[in-house]
Length: 178
Image (cartoon, rainbow, N blue to C red; front, side, top):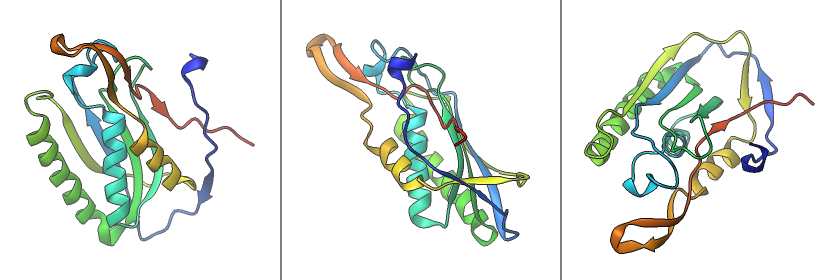
């Protein structure tokens, strides 16, 4: 609903697809999810937040352009999926895929008891006919990093009863034409 929607000033630039760039689709899926007020104390993965973390790490290590990011289905449900499309120099493609695979192993170790079916993949995709790169990529990644996720206050900590929590349950980058 509109009361749960934030519209951020972002810019998209239409780019010529560089011949020396590869296009990758990053997919997170099958996290446990649940209601953001009831199940948030289970500490399961929020795929939107985790995708933001992964993209920030990739951006810090590689020459990444962010083409698309989306995830979750409802504002009051912990995001169980997220997808991103990125462009990187072809010379970095395999290193980025290996980086994502290593990140997936770390997340599996960290969350296997909570989110045993969680999957993270990076696959090569065809170059789009027209690629748009987010000009406000740094601001968007910072937002995903600083947005709180989890229990804010407990009504009864001993019984793990949540009083208030925050969650980014749905994220997409709807593009509005000027």
